[in-house]
Image (cartoon, protein in one colour):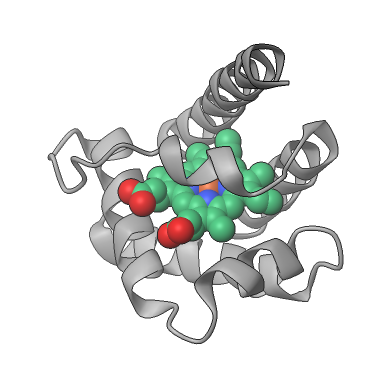
Length: 124
Ligand code: HEM
């Protein structure tokens, strides 16, 4: 098995991950409700997001957290997201970038959850 070595690999990773996400009964509906029928802009952002993380090429320069603030998601959603993401990586890739992607997803998930927790305390 190869590592993630190109944008084509990132596209395969992201497409395969969202195939799983869309079938998942816990987090699939969260995406379907928000994204409706037009997945293309979301997928394009996600290709850039992971390319930037793995290759540092500025393919994404947005603010990843804000859209998550209004989805009503909590720890179980993040756990499922991470499980499916790691599963996808293990099925397709092996190497330093694959490991890096797993670690970064966990770290970002923690940051997002921390922010959601602070907002909950401040807002309710
Ligand atoms: C650590 C885990 C996660 C990472 C790294 C991540 C990353 C991202 C990024 C980069 C975007 C695009 C933001 C933008 O520029 O517009 C995004 C959007 C989105 N994420 Fe996540 N996310 C994570 C967890 C989750 C979870 C747990 C859910 C729901 C179960 C979720 C649902 C969504 C949805 C629905 C959008 C689209 C929002 C919109 O366009 O309105 N994400 N995510």
